[in-house]
Each structure stands twice: as structure tokens, then as C-alpha cells.
Image 1 (cartoon, each protein chain N blue to C red):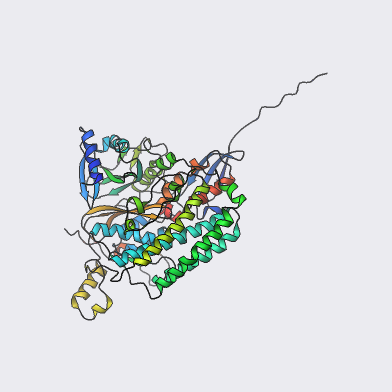
Image 2 (cartoon, chains in turn brown, yellow):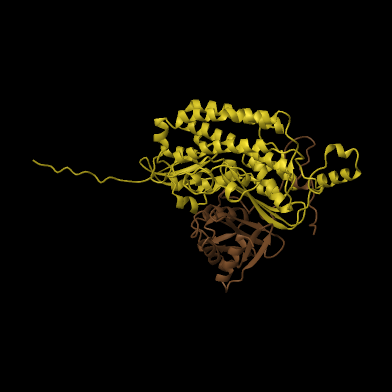
Length: 175
Length: 398
């Protein structure tokens, strides 16, 4: 068993009343946690002995049209001993929101603003939840799957605007 | 008659000024809103996003193979390392490893890229502090590296040379000799830069004790790369989570003590010397053999096979018109880039396009710690702090 899986099992033992699912893929450990208890789970990982004191990354995935469509993904790292765990929380609906991790790591500040900006997921308790990459008056959240990727029209003769993604069409998933 | 002199009460208020978005020291388009009390900084708000081009969205709409061109455009100073990072993630998703020759070649070219990036940083940050002659020397050496990369890939930058499962083609004749010639004269050149800066009183006064970041803050803000190591965080992806066989090379990870701009400078200088050590070992062990995996569902068949084998033509057609189909799953692969941990988080649903490609960039996290570094410092030291972080704004904004 990898060190990450051991750590995840240890945290699951400590949070007995929380429903944590463990997934192993390519030697990487993913912990799926309920969104309501995400802060407790993250804190337990952070403070565990030989745990993961560093928040390396925080991002989201949109699984539209599946429900619950959003996954908020926290990548936690411990440097010595080396261990890396991914914690995920699933969010449903049109107004997804989850508790902010800024109290645990100041690094979460910009990362959460980026997720808010590009996915429209609200982080409750964030000190300054504003757009970070896009202009303040931008409409919509571009990394949502229902936000289309379009081609800007250009004035070339015989130019047919084509969405870049249409050049090689998407194939259905293969098992 | 005596009159009492009363001094009017001093009125204090902070002054808000904009540094950027077009400021020569920001190396890109970075706006800093500074709150000043006299010359002392009481608050800094970095405003980013001017170079946001939506790379992550673009990558979701293209096949895995088409996406190889994007990483180099996100972080355009160490392009080779970027491409390797993305390909490592897709390889992990597919569960394949490239042939040994490709892995060693990736190490050599990645370390050359790192030296090129650090040389550019050295020259430009010295230029920010008005040591203008060094810029020309470091660019001369960087040019030599770009020539080597051009000789191998055909491009000075934005190579598009790394493939999922290996490399596009083998290194040309004379590659090894040329790299050896370069790394033979590198230490002398680094010593020259060292003498120009390390013994330079002005350089030391401008960098020592400036832009301090404690080890705790570096951890809390997730700072990696020379910023983290300058503050004493012993984390190098090549050592902690080895990839491409980095665990078989002997090299040291330099660490700073104080966490100031001078320590970051020392860390980067030492990293260049360590990179040279790695290249030397890699050249000694560069094995023969293919540079691309033999799996026809992943890599294009060799050109010569196309005229003889119908099957090769079918594979070629399928890979070009549809692309490869990784299994359902998600992976995160990280490399040690010159600006900290660079990671690609790729989510696959089994189709020919990724559901999500997330670029974890070192510059983004490192820049977030800037307000801590410059707090209660002087406005002129902001330039030193920004230079010592060594940001690539394309990497911050993506």
C-alpha cells in the first residue's frame, strides 16, 4: 500500500462519522469527501502526523451534463516524507457553493478566486471572492462545459470561421 | 511678549499608486496597486489576468496530441520542461513509459532549458538593478543553448518536440559533442557572473535582507522552486517525486537560510551548476535504441513503414483523424520547472479529448506571496522582489 493510501485510511479511521470514499488509480490516491465536511477532512489531512501540510493546487472539474456536475479538487502534498493526496468534493446545481479553505491555507485565496472566476463556484467565508483572471464585467464562467468556445470572425476572403474543436470531432468514450 | 508656537498636527494618509501594467521591471503585464506611507509599502494588491488566453479551455476542445503545442506557449522560457510535463501526465494516464533513450534525452534537454531560463533570469534581474553588462553575457550563453535546441528540434523556442510516449525524432549527429562543449565552458562563465554580482557591493546591498519570505510563509503560500528553496523549504520535485529517472542521478538541492532575494540568487546559481552535473551524467549514460514507444495506438508509425504496411497506414489515419483514447481516470504529473512545481492534472472520460486539463503553475502561487515579501519595505525594493520571484506572466494568467 502506498503511503498516500495509508494516510487516507488513517484519516478515514479518525473521521469515523464522515463518509469518505477512497479511489486508487495509477498509484494516486483520491479521497471523495462530502462537501459539507470538507474543511474537517482537509484539516485532518493537514494536521495528521506525516500528513500533507501543503496545499499544492485547488481546482474544479465540470462533468456537465452529469449530476452532481462539479468536483472541487484539492491537491495536498507532504514533502517529508513524500506523500500526495487528492481530496474531492462533489457539488450539484446552478448555484454551487462550498466552504472556503483560506483559513487553513492562505494559498487557497487566489486559487479559490480562480475557480470562482472560471467555474462560478462560490466559496463561503472567502475574504475577497472576486474575479481574478477575467475582467470584472465579464459575463459567465468560461470553464463550464455549457460556455461555448467560439471563433472570432476575421475579415479574410473565403475564411470560414471554424471552432478549433470542430476540426477533429469528439469521439464517444471507449470502455 | 511670548507667543506659543504650536505645531499643526501631522496629517497622515496613505497614497495609492499603480505600478504597471506596463512597467519594465514586471517582465510582462502585471499591475501592482501599492498603498504607500511615504516610501514605505503598507499594502500590495497584484492585479493579474492581462495575459489570460484560456489555454485550459482550448485544451479541453482538442485531442491529446493536438494539445502538445500549448504548454510551451503557457510558459515560454523553459519550453522543453513544459512539454515534458504535459506528456508525462498523458503517459501516466495511458500507463506507458517512454524508451530509455527518450527519457535520458528529456533529462538533458530539460536541464539545458533550466539553465537557459535561469540565465535569462540572471541577466534580466541584474538589468533591473542596473547591472547592464551582465545581460549581454548571459544572453550569449542562452543563445548557445537555444542553438542546441534548434539543432535538435528545428525551433529555438516552442519546439513541439516531445511526444506522448517519447520524442518526435532522434537527436542529430554531433549533438553530444556540442552539449559537452557547452557544459565545459559553462562553469567559467558562471564564475564570471559570480564575480560580477556576488562580490558586488551594490548588488548585495540591494538584495540582502530584501523581499524576505520566512519558511512558514513559503509553506503556507505553497511557494515552490527557488522561492521555496531560498526560504529553506527542502522540496525539489526531482528528488521528492522523481520522474524520468531523476532518482538515478547524483545532484544536490541548494537551500537558502534567510529567504531573501540574495538567497534566491544563490540558489539559482547553484542550480545551474547542479544541472550541469546532471547533464554530464546523462550524456555518459545516453543509451541507444528508439526514442518513441512501439505502441501503435499511442505513437505514429515510422514514415518508412507507411509505404510497406497497410496496417501502419490505418494506425496513422486513426491517430491523426481521431487521436488516442486513454482509459477513464485522472492523473497529476508534476515536474520541477525553473519557477517551481509545474503540474498537469488531466481528467479523461475515455474519449479522444480530455475533460479537463489543469495547469498548476509555480509562478501563480509564488506571486501570491509578493504582498508578504514587500510589506513594510521600500517602493524601490518592489522591483527587486518581483525580479527575485522570476515570474512568467503567461504562466500566471494561462
